[in-house]
Length: 419
Image (cartoon, rainbow, N blue to C red; front, side, top):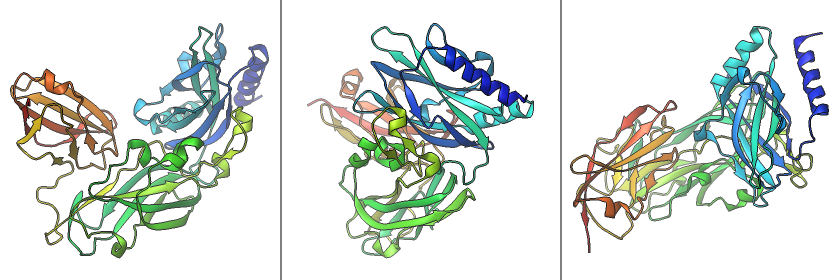
């Protein structure tokens, strides 16, 4: 009898011996890319005063006694879901939970190496739920079956890089002229229809929040209609073959607005499509009825593409590197008690942005971190009370996947006044 069959029989036997699970999930098993990252939409139902905590991948399961379910064998753990890509959300009913399982390539590599040694070729994703009323913890697992990144794997976006056909992260366009052509290079798993639209945030409009920049399939069903919409430029619907990479042409440059001076944000909005491999059955999960389509799920917000409309000739903004501060300007006078918004350009290779504010003696006053796709930050009101003088400095650092700095902007001065 093969090792895999013995392992599956052992799991089945343990399921008969352990207490019945109150929490269910769908899908309970899914094909994943054995040679790279994978993202899967999972629905959990039947939560009873329980909240999700950490999620872990491992090669073997053991009884969670005295808790409920099967937990990871500590000797076979491959990794935990990184906080920076955790897009999970408790649904409004609090009895259901939407999880976006983003498997890093490092976890897939460890699972592949274990299978090459003759161990179980499937591995497990285990979510722990903690009771808020003193009950036992509950562990719920999803089986990950290693496959290729082709048609039998859920359609998921792994990386999206937007760019104009000019070598600059922020492009200047003369007022009333035609913007340069844009495109998006998309790496993905699976196969299916990619449906979406291009939108523009015009100067003066409130910027989209991080969850507005997620693909629609990355959100719980009740949250999807709440994503903010902006001026639509053009729609698209293209079929993605199981090749893993596509270059999506941007909207017709003649349709991109350039009539008002200021900073614009061109958004790529991806809608959920019907993908059998990634469907989640709410009835099977005990979270309602119907099928949730999650084609084009992603574990990250898609950063906007920026361009500036002014009176220039359409050349790139001067001194525009991968990360630049936008506002407020050098020497800006900030009156305590009034809102202060710091903004910067986005770096396509960053995962996080770290905002630093110090006094003129370089004493740290505030450090904050925001996700990729967010290009602005409002410091809290207490910042003005923490400063001992009137001279402040601020800057932004771009951080990579391992938390190391990959780019930073020059320091910029602020002057604080107390009315």
